[in-house]
Length: 229
Image 1 (spheres, one colour):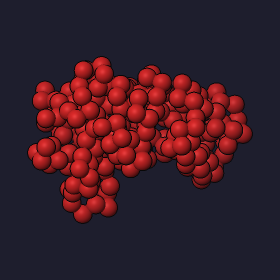
Image 2 (tube, one colour):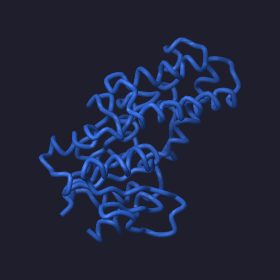
Image 3 (tube, rainbow, N blue to C red):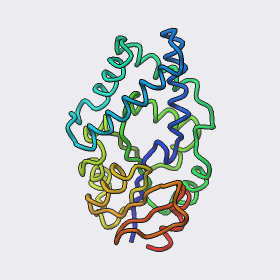
């Protein structure tokens, strides 16, 4: 029986595109550089970081600092500019950052399960993500939040998935993780012994694709998965 549900944050609860667009605007204003050029550098750096994490070649204790420094290097600026832009972006996001159906799904699950986040950090610290979840009321339905800059492990490392389970004394077979990245979220959770749910917008229906794994179109489809467990 599932006791704990672990949520990825970006593109699972919150729209990463909204945050990235705000980060691009902030960097463009600070540097006087076109938004197009900034966006190209951010997307290129994100892919570089994802490769590093997939191969687990980065330092998990400095995941945030490494990503901020890589972006600063790509832009040819001091890392302080990246930190300022991330702060400005966080201050300017509006409710469009909350993905459709997410708040309703969390309300439905609240009180029935232990609800956690298991999130990686990239260009901004987890404290900013926490602020956004508080600002738009999602934190009210989350029991405890776990992030890579706090637990010193990032997805797909097994340690990142096991941190919430150890805290709440829950076995992997009693937990499910949902996220949008197949390598980081889906495969990482399966390797940790958990149930896993991959959000793929191109999926035609909720489908079991592994003994312990499902594919869904959007976050709220998790309710259908739980009814099968």
